[in-house]
Length: 159
Image 1 (cartoon, helix red, strand yellow):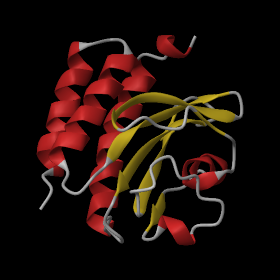
Image 2 (cartoon, rainbow, N blue to C red; image 1 turned 135 degrees about the vertical axis):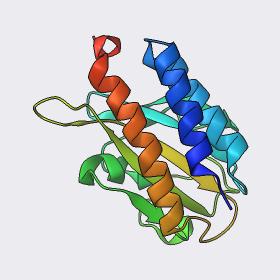
Image 3 (cartoon, rainbow, N blue to C red; image 1 turned 90 degrees about the horizontal axis):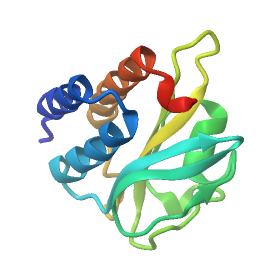
Image 4 (tube, rainbow, N blue to C red; image 1 turned 180 degrees about the vertical axis):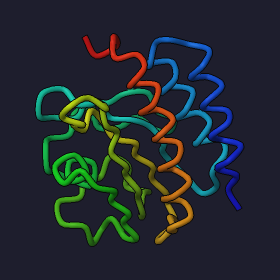
């Protein structure tokens, strides 16, 4: 069982400690990678124009840039909704950064301005098919809200 409450407290503590979002994302990736079982990648892609650019992560080297609407991450960006994929090999247009990945969950990160636009995604991969449950989605969404709250308080990192 994954302890999302504890991981959320850890992320919130780092969010209070540091004004810059980049180290917060780096520590969040490390907390998730260490705290969740059966993962082979956890990290962030940040929006740059219409693409996603690799951000802080834990795991093997990853794709550097993902086009809008391509793969699970690009689809999350385009559709602005969580993508929970039980079998990435059955996902149309899946981008295989690591051939060991078999399931994936991707959650959008929003800037809470007037447009509430997607400014990045949290991407987590597993070598286990159907690894991510509704409980995982809810727990990860709570952690994303902590990050979004931090971004709302300090948007200077986007400038």
